[in-house]
Image (cartoon, rainbow, N blue to C red; front, side):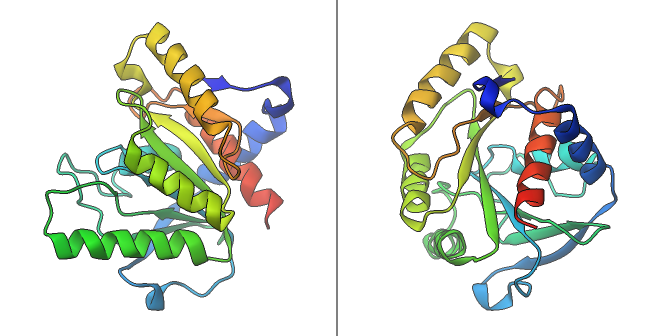
Length: 220
């Protein structure tokens, strides 16, 4: 499900490219705990960011059709590093970022995660798009707004992807989409197309694949 004008509608070719990209075998490249150990800059990078337990790992597994490629957990804050994944073709990199906004971990660990996330988002030259995941049950929170402000200031293109869209009623989802559209209107780096997805039902997954393939193609 999308909120979009016809200008942003995906074409048959976009969906075909998304299928081709994500039907490849994807593999884990490396986990990065500090910027000094990032892979050499080269392939375009598409990152998934969001609050802890927003469903990033589940969404990645749904995208690539590989159960268990990204580790999932009911424990918030499990992803503690930048996890890089790559398809057989070698590009793009898909980057699973540490969840932010989890306050129950040790303070020094939270600070380290936060610094890693912010420095990566602000300084990675080949980062073409950040899919900013927002739980449909909660909408945009202050911690999300803080990251959006950071991305605006760094001029990094980002796009809101609503997760767990199956967990709320269709009317509530429609209202959330409208509120979110209104919110991002004032954010300079926000891409105007919002995607609503569900890892459990696969709703919106084809749209997300098409979008990722389009971004990769535009920045190859």
